[in-house]
Amino acid sequence: MLEVTGKWNNYYPNAMKSWSVNWDAICPIFKFSSEVRKVIYTIMI
Image (cartoon, rainbow, N blue to C red; front, side, top):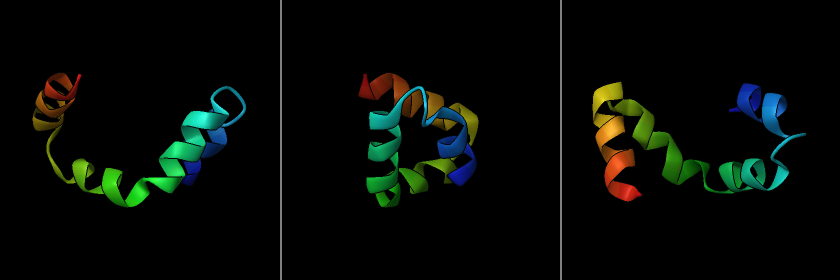
């Protein structure tokens, strides 16, 4: 998380703040394979 925040915080500070605040909800998604995450992202949009 810190690596992503460090890289993108200057460009997208509000998104990175949201990422940090909601990390407990975001983190479990990364336990799925990339194929399953793609389906999750597609359905959520």
